[in-house]
Image (cartoon, rainbow, N blue to C red):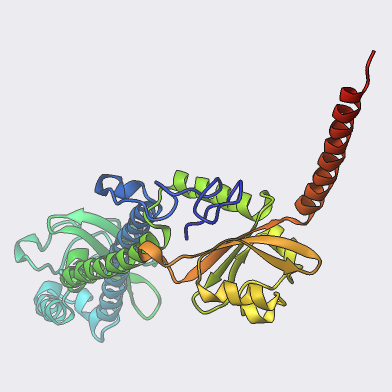
Length: 373
């Protein structure tokens, strides 16, 4: 809303105060300055924050997926190794004359059914009885088995020929608790994370959709903010606030702004003093604020007026009034007020002094022309 405070009796729109021009009123749009405006900076900041949140969410979900995949691989390899090690007839098969002939088909059947990469049965010293590749039967197992040979389970992550994998080694004990063999089961993390990897395109698609939706919402908010701030940049907003603060608290001329709904929008300190307005005056109907009927009628009429004399208690006010809906402005009006009570009293004293000086002058002239030497 554009208002101007008069310095010598003219109405709103002249004199000093909040001036017309760039940054005060309806500034001209400059696309090059779009990012420098308050709305542009808010848009860039919000898009940056949304982008950061989306990227952080995607990274967190990917890392969580990798962690879940590794944990699932550990759980599956351990479950398969323990189940096969505790299966009936395992001890007798290991102690039999040809453990490989008995255990190899069983291990392969269990490997395919459990979807692990290998199930290896071996001696406590690590000599294989079974392997998916029969050529490796009878050779030494490559891995840490010392703890398993001592009766404890072993689980480790390693990088093999198939990629990053997890293997679990479980001891096979007889009825006396003696370790007679070991069972190792391994699975690549890629195999477990395959389902999660298939969901990554969906995840990225959802992230892109969320980014687009958030950007569109941010654009709408920024557009509304741009309309409300009239495309001002922060420096112009600061300067406008300083002038607004000066109007409210510094100038010795009252300002009243009335909206199209006949409610008081703004009253500065001088206007509050002149009309003794309550603290909650803004937002209330003009007819409820105790104005003189003639003044109240002018404020809601939209009729232009210049230096009309109105009363406020024992004060005489010079009121200038202009509508604000010209040039596409918002509906309503603005009035400026000057207390002329003291000015009129001073004018009376000046007139009295002038009359006395004139009387003295006339008497001096009359006496001076009648006297001789």
